[in-house]
Image 1 (tube, rainbow, N blue to C red):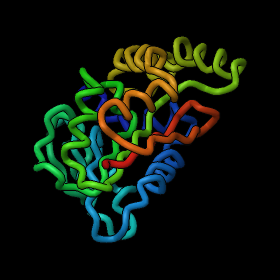
Image 2: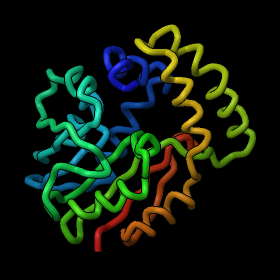
Image 3: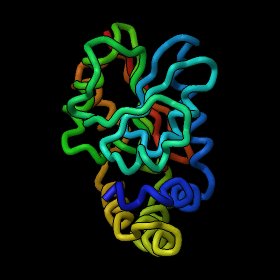
Image 4: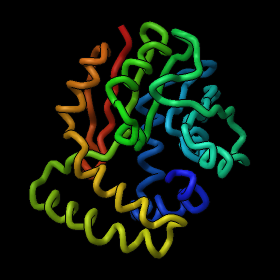
Amino acid sequence: MFDGVARRYDLTNTVLSGGRDAGWRRATREAVRARPGQTVLDVAAGTAVSTVELAAGGVTAIACDFSQGMLRAGAARAVPKVAGDAMALPLADASVDAVVISFGLRNVADPDAALREFLRVTRPGGTLVVCEFSSPTWTPFRTVYLEYLMRALPRIARAVSSNPDAYVYLAESIRAWPDQPTLAGRIQGAGWDDVAWRNLTGGIVALHRARRP
C-alpha cells in the first residue's frame, strides 16, 4: 500500500494537511533536541523529507522505512537510508542517540513491540519523539475534524494521490488511534521514562517525548 502512494506522497501530505506538515516537521526536530554529532534514527521515514529536517544542525539522521518504494521515491535526498521493520530494526543495541517516528507508529502491526524496539537501539539517556495524529482537545472542533477525516479527506486524496484508496485506511487508522494520555501510558509501559506530550494544531497532532533510563 505504501509503495503505491510513494510517487505523490509528499504532495498529498501537504494538500491534506493544509500546508501544516512543514511546521509539524520543524516542531518534531525541535523536540528531539539533538546536538551536532549525534545520531537520530527516523523510523517510518517514507521519502525521507522528515529525515532531511532532522539532519539540520550537524546531526546524522538515518531514514528507515519498511517500504522500499518510499525509500526509492526519496532517493535524491542526501541522507543515509536503510530498509527496516520498526519491530525488528537492523541496528545494534544502544547505537543511536534518539529515535523519531512521525505519522508511522499507528501503521505498525504491534506498536508496543516497536516502542520496545526503539528502546533497545537507543543509548541510555537518549530520546524518543513520536509525532502522530491524535485527538483534538476542543469537542466541537473534534466533531468537525472527524467529519473531515471520514468524508472530505478521501475525496481530496482521489484528486491528488497516486493511490487514493490508501487514504480511506488513513482516515480509519487516525480515528481508531488512542488519545494523548493513552499513548503516553503505552510509551511508559514499553520502558521509557519522563513521558510528556505537546499538542499541535489543537490536538490534531501530538508530539510525545520520552527518555531512555
